[in-house]
Length: 253
Image (cartoon, rainbow, N blue to C red; front, top):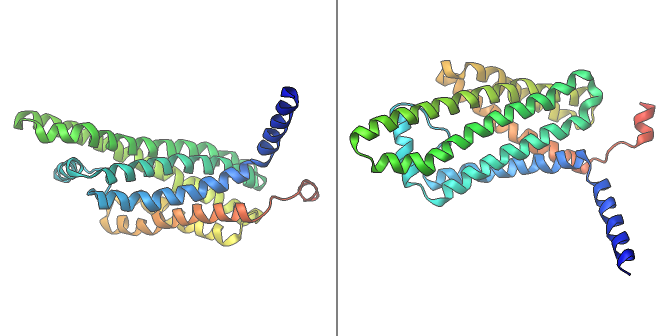
């Protein structure tokens, strides 16, 4: 009896794993990325902090004050944003399995996507650590100690900003247009999503490289920022709704 039950459980597990394809993982993770950021950003704002990564100087000190007074909703939102980056990494890596027929160059997409979103995730983890420890420490410190902690805060903020800049440049400026091109070439996903990807690349990726030099350009990158999450959600829905091509069809093509 025990052997029979074990055999049935094993067969059930095998069927589950066979149905859990990279295509499905990419789809679910893409939708979760959208949901995490959709909830996380408003939670942070309602919790009392406008942005996750602080600036340097006086704006950084204002961020410390806001983080020290923030409610638990800010921390919940920050962790959702971090989770969104992680599941976004999973989605971009798994998406390669769907779009690799576009050509050998596509191997760069999951590699650079993993590197880019890892940098972005680290750039988000540093500020939340600052909010937990540095913000209350700075607020309760004596003026002489505050001056030293302000330098530490500026250093950590600068590191976060640089990591975020490089990670965004890789993700939005290289990985997204690679996948957008592959979508247009293979039609494995509706082609309009590919064009949406190029909007992300233009505003958030390529134009975003100039954001530190101009506040106007920095404002325009917001278009690409929101377009990216629509891009991820659209890919997720498309992958889950559209069945994978059969082996026979793949061979004939």
